[in-house]
Image (tube, rainbow, N blue to C red; front, top):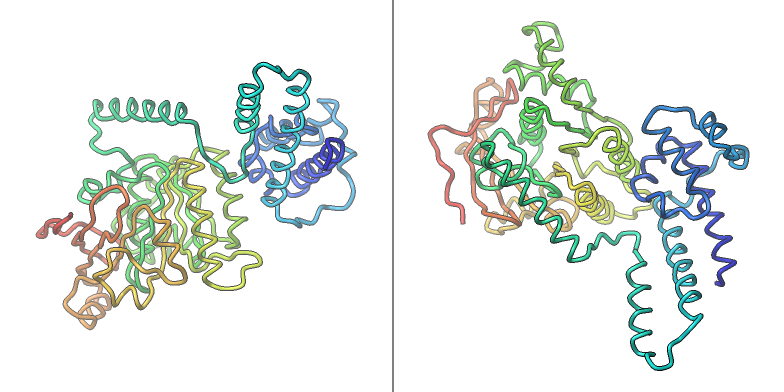
Length: 428
């Protein structure tokens, strides 16, 4: 392609992106999260205005008129989202790279120094490579990495001076925090276990502690309704049975509801398609920075065009891993474990149902399992609303130790507590 054809194509694709943002509100957060204003060539001002309208609840048509932009050029049929918006963004970025290369070459070739050709070529190579960026390339220069390192070091030093003991956000379980340093930026957690082993309750215990800290959590429930998740969370916050609360039999929970509102907790229970979920995560993070995302659970996530469970789960978990790094925000993913994984307890890395990519992508993998002597004892105690012994088995920790934490689980309230008569057993 020559420069003219690249320019025409860029204008066509950028116009498509702007039109999608106007007619499909959910696409705005996705485009804003993936592209910066300086990455638009033909429609930079239109992008800026739509972004501003989205963040500040303004009318797009009114702001276009106010800024003397041609709103009518985007009229026509409501655009069909084919190809998916992320694929379209990738095409735009690739064409922008070609556009940059043409301009660099054009300006550089005006005068080639005959006595310094080698230096000229090296300088030209540097200009080109430093100006190109892949759509999924998150690499930073060593200067940027060092700057980030010093920034974090200063933040953590100040945190420890103020009495903090761990790097990340506390989970509410001191013994766990002492091993993993809390919920750390960019980390992807996987909480695994068989059905009815308390995965959702475990995640909600962590959410409850973040709510008490005033941290913002966004919870994606793909199995249960939002009200069901809320009643279980209220049960944990108030040490009551969630069913009693929803029936009106429990004690007053207005203080806890105010606490939840102030924390900014959001619960989504909607379409589980991964691109829509990530678009929602972009949007939530734009509204107000998120301290933790929770996905309940990964085997229920859908991927458009996927041909198998393996492909679906692999694609979803890798997209979530990228998202955690992009936002510098921890993500907890709930997952079922495979039968092979349950049988092979000697394997230091858990085997999750659907794809080996889950274990590979996880920074931390915890299996939640029974601590009772046999299955019948576990079932009997749960049926009689008696506390049961459970184990949180840290099977993988990319940044620290592994081992087992003995827990007590109250099925009536959904509360997990560290067993007072057992210590953390050997971490290595």
